[in-house]
Image (cartoon, rainbow, N blue to C red):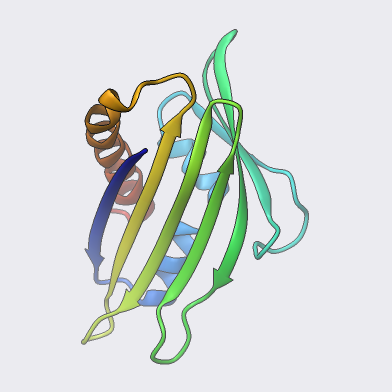
Length: 145
């Protein structure tokens, strides 16, 4: 399993960073060759399911996910969102945490445990490097950096 972590600081308030990072439709607009669609109606929360489809034509795969923990930031407490990846190709989990910082800004941390079915563990360092780059760019885009 490949494990990577991406961290960003922002002058934006913690509630705005939380809103942007948990706007899962927006993720698909920032990750190359990916489209995201929500499968669950209503506001995002525990039980929300969505699919990120990555690739072109027949060379594409689905990355279905479900929100299994949803704790928006509150006074003195960071926001935490846990996603379980339940696809035929992509497995694992992602944790998004958003912390308030002194002066009204925020710090966002994205930790991903990723496994691609059929890809040997020897490739985990390559996947981690690619994941840090890809998710770092996505976070930068979502946060307007």
